[in-house]
Amino acid sequence: MDFKDIAFKVVISLFAIFYYLYALVVSKQVKIMDKTLQDEHNGFILFVTSLQVTISLVILIIVLLSILII
Amino acid sequence: MENNNKKSSAFYSYSLNPQAKFDTQEDGEKVYLLLRSHPFTQIGWILGSILFFILLFSFNFFIQSFFNPGQIFLINLFFTIIIFSYIWFNILNWYFNVGIITSKRIIDIDFYAVLYKEITNAQLGRIEDTTVKSGGYLESFFDYGSIFVQTAGTEANVEFINVPHPSDAVQIINKLLSKKHGL
Image (cartoon, rainbow over all chains, first blue to last red; front, top):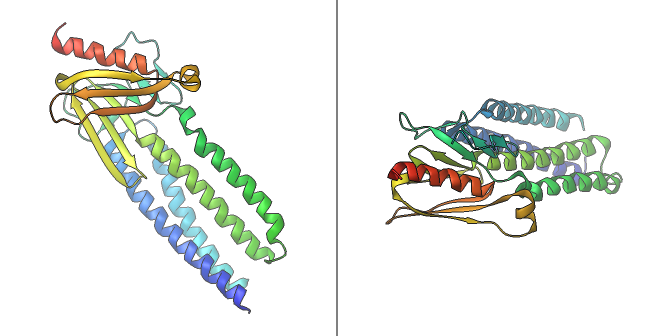
């Protein structure tokens, strides 16, 4: 394994971790915003936000698994 | 307020008598109008997102010789996620930055970069003046502009920037003020 592959794995892993943390922060903020303003589409907004958290978690798992394969 | 002909328009950016509620709402306080920025003013980030997708597509032709297929898949996955996050972030910014006109006051709810919250409100009895600013081809064509509500004393002024049908909104405010002052 050369330096380029190692660097790639480190960068992509850090990215996956930060994206997961970002999704969690956004999710928390959306809950605050939902409390501040309740409109007719808030259900959809909350659904997409929880979907984002789920996707970010799945991506984190994919990245960690693919690091072992690539 | 019931006689206003623009019931709800421009992708929920002008909602008359909406079902919306807000956290500091008092008992018996009725929401008459909910305003968001006109959808046309969001064109910047929409075009930006399309451009990012085109750049990502073009980028794939250059990276094929540097990375293996697995790595290319991961790079594409992440850039796609970044673009979708950017889109979602802007949608949230647009959706939760609202102006509300109720039977008791005018409220401006702003979330800066999703993280910072600022709520400004002006009691109807403290409002001194309302100004509409709308100028230029696009504002005239799509009928949007800004509303400035000036309050008495040290109370903060309320601003609704780039909202649809600003004249109709001010008409609603004026009707409420007349009602409040018994004119």
